[in-house]
Image (cartoon, rainbow, N blue to C red):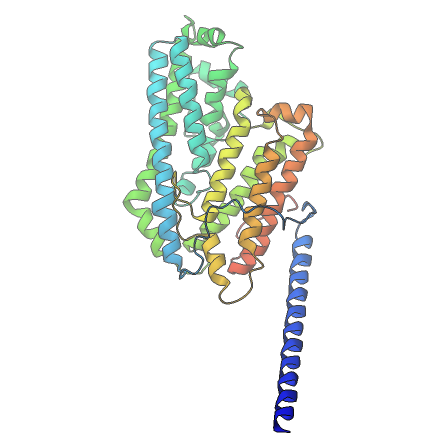
Length: 407
């Protein structure tokens, strides 16, 4: 009899356990559905589709099971990502300066080709630091002097020929930087010979040479200032400001990162040329307009850099450290994150797949088949939702910038 009673008790306990687990699973489903509703309501531009079958493109589960601290993450960002990226940019800018000097000393085709390659190398290096608009870079508005596009080619030419330009003026930000060099190296003519003629002209050749060197040296100076500040003082300040207030380093950097992805990568490189924010497409608004067949290459470099930062990948290496992905992994110990890190990385993977469908010249892509550009924008937009809405909510970080384009 005791055995029968014991057996009945065991079955009862087992039944209650199954019932409890079933209720818990139902609660989780409700939470997931509520989260999805919030996500769907957060933007009119989010595309439909389940990415659960996507492949996670990140190389490792950095941070999984590792004790998270803001200091650890800040140190990884500063020492292994930001400073090395700026070092690479300054090295490339120094090479660009040397190539510009060689070309202006002897303006021949060989030196022009070398200068064009140095320009592209530096432009690609810029894509790895553009998101780090913090500290001295923010103070001196580095981005505005280095990579404003489209270029005001007419205004630049007028001031160039007059010789009265002031590259420190905020009114001249769209007449310098990588876009100005793009025009000076690729936009003056249809062949190397036609371009070289501007620099060998008896009347204005010296003016073109002087302006070219002035633009390059200004870019080298500004990027060097930012790197020097990181190394001398800002690195320590950046890591020490490890609190959770809106003005502390983590919150500021995460906001700057998402702002860059949303406004300069998603909108600037794709959305604006595709006409998302206007009544028609604008093929002349692509990056590197005059050497357009590198515009997709610049976009891919920027996208890779953005994903590497999310995953904490060390600059130009395979090693990784504490990151936003690692932070999300760490939070799994205290509650469900709905695999948000995988959703974000999977979406990066889908973006890369979409880019394979685009022309190397994004301006031509807009003119030939703009639908693919619009589709690319939509796929990029979904990661805005994952990061700006879901990730910031999970990490308890408040958006610190005003969004005026309906996102």
